[in-house]
Length: 446
Image (cartoon, rainbow, N blue to C red; front, side, top):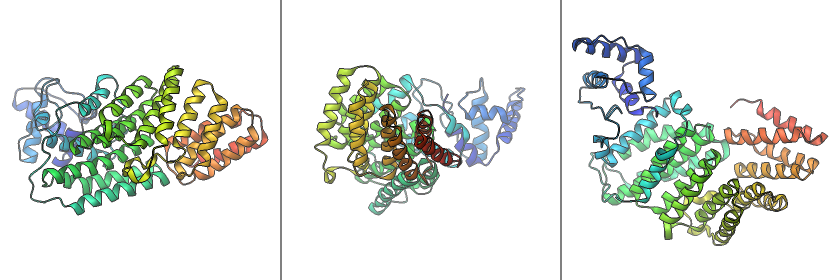
């Protein structure tokens, strides 16, 4: 079950508590001859995605319609008939906007069920990618509205994406997520509901997709994988509305990365292939580099040596074609050395320690922002330990710990824990000292 953010948004808008809604539903039921005894715990279950039986969904609509002084349908409260083509779906892009902004509002209000929801799997995980890749396209994304969206508004969204991406790199996703979600609610949602022509609308949806993708990255970095996936799916739908195939490929790369972390290796390969196929000539060398490198890691985990090495070759060839002037802002994360650390991880899975060590060392020598450097140093530390160079690994790990200071990131914390455990079992005095240094950093709560 997925959290019902549409119902939650309407409850908030109606200004009624969970206990209050349950009481009003019981009262409305009595008027129909029903004996209902719902409490706030029942409403909590509905918000987690449970659909009550019988006439109760209709009663919820009736209660909220009175409070809001407007009609409320089953689709409005996220309880439409499963499998039916709902009015929200028929509403197309405008219906999507309402669902998306409802999620942003719930996230800003720190609803706990959003952050604990697991990532979906199977058809539910695949359909957003399939829908992005296949027709129909959005013929016209214009929208009537009293407040017209200007190019200055779109420029603000683009600047905000860059700002929050840099904040994420320096401070981590845990610290950045509340800020970017607040911006989505306060600044972005009103623009999406504003008025714009088709050309302006496509640029608006593109700028919004970039912001939502960063929100997803921050959720992923916070270990909220179900929420991150929903943001990535939103970004993919916005990318389709923008008409920018390359942007969609970038969002799929984020889904590939998450699938790798969740050990969904076959899905990682399939998603990367979809991005490479559908983006076609619109894909840039930087994005192609990352997709091929991640495919290599997935194939290596699956034990397919030949395919892994082929993907490594493609990634290295594409890396040689990267020209920063020809890349969009979103692919700026594909910095010098990224392909080296990706290849190092793939070679390590294939059992090639020497090759992995060579690539990890090259990655560390390449310039990168602090966050990227921490991951690279963690990989090099691990390989140095595997090759019996504990004292050298201690120095690398100490530099890693220093670089990680000030970052609030669950992913970096995972790397720190892993390195600490490997150092602690090495038997080296210097390594033990480095492990204690990391342990001190881990004592600070996120």
